[in-house]
Length: 86
Image 1 (cartoon, helix red, strand yellow):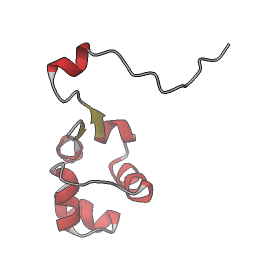
Image 2 (cartoon, helix red, strand yellow):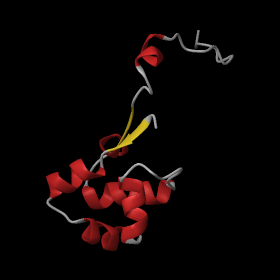
Image 3 (cartoon, helix red, strand yellow):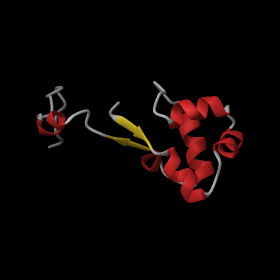
Image 4 (tube, one colour):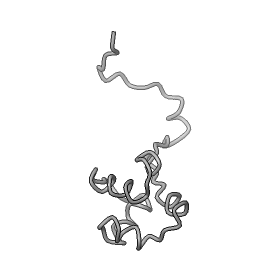
């Protein structure tokens, strides 16, 4: 998956357990594990905001984009009809 989840990194930095984070955010440890292990298909902004508040971080500290393969890094971006500002 091209979106990597770095919740483990922030948990280690904050010396916090998965169970404690789940309790403080208000989600089940099972749902946090799905997100943490990169198996989630989506995350609600409210959940992301709560994670950031509890971990005192920014969304970019928890989520990052990775190319799926080496060719993806060399491929040009597709033109989706978005115009640059003048």
